[in-house]
Image (cartoon, rainbow, N blue to C red; front, side):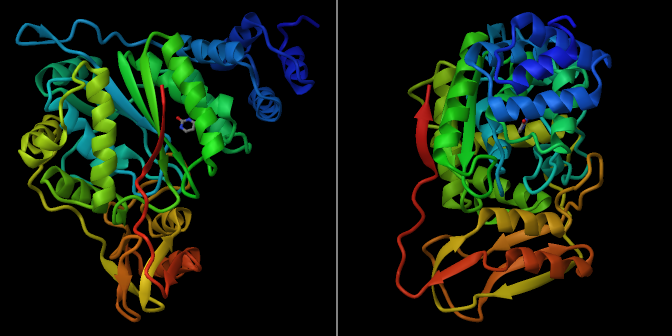
Length: 432
Ligand code: URA
């Protein structure tokens, strides 16, 4: 059997070997074309999860996934005769993570172009497109020409990635999802970075999350993931920086599509929950610096309304009505605080799973989501709470979903009888 035969490649990795550039190219090319069977790719993914890959293998794997489709060319974007720099952000995903919504127009308001090619959610972390689709009229699909035109006119685009962007990753991710092979640092890093490299952004800021609501529950693993992605981006010529941020408690005060749009609009209006503002500004500072504006204070355009103007233009450019009422779920159920004291913990994973049970997320690709469903919480970590007063509100179109959501929330809330320190800041580290 040749060393390039899929079985030889699986066996080599199963036994702890290092795959050659040619082996990696051959197997991913064959998989994209349908010559390598899904069960063979699943076995290889499991061998990679167990045995890992070195830096050269991960770079080759990523390059082969980029080469499986079209690499977009965003060079030559201009506005009023001046060339535009492209800067994007990617989060590894978390509960209540709506940061893309205020961040993208905020950065565009400073004259940079943000090409956010996003996905839909699967499982307990929401998808950015699902959130924006809660806005009446907004459409996620743009042609490449429309994408360029909007980047030049508005500077901010959030839209669906085309089927031709790293198709090997799309096919592989669907397989990993049903074979227990998602939580592999080489596979996650190459999956995320192949799409960002193929998208053609010049600079990228990564928000790598750690905690119960994230892929990586420990900071050590999140730091390895961040380092791997920063190296992949840098080696591919994309200026890449990562922040390590906390996802043990959910972000802001809501998880759910329309609920998170409403919270993002509060941030754009100069208000909103402190942790959402903090993380938006921390990521904005990194993006502005990467785009050549290191001395700008992004808080100015939240306070001054320029970020809100860019949001309205971004939503309207994709057919959305920024003034329309957002959908609301037909039913609500309030959960009262079990004790009086101070909110010491609210588990991110439990809240994410509850929002998913309420209809905000999907369990199979392509399934519909409820725009109004989700969870809101009425206190942040460190805030005083009173026994019997509303602590959480559950929102659902179908009231039979409340019981399953309540089961997910069992044990999720800790109330301390002594005053607890407020939640520490979200940003815990930086990797460049
Ligand atoms: N997001 C991705 O795009 N890929 C992964 O493997 C995990 C999260």
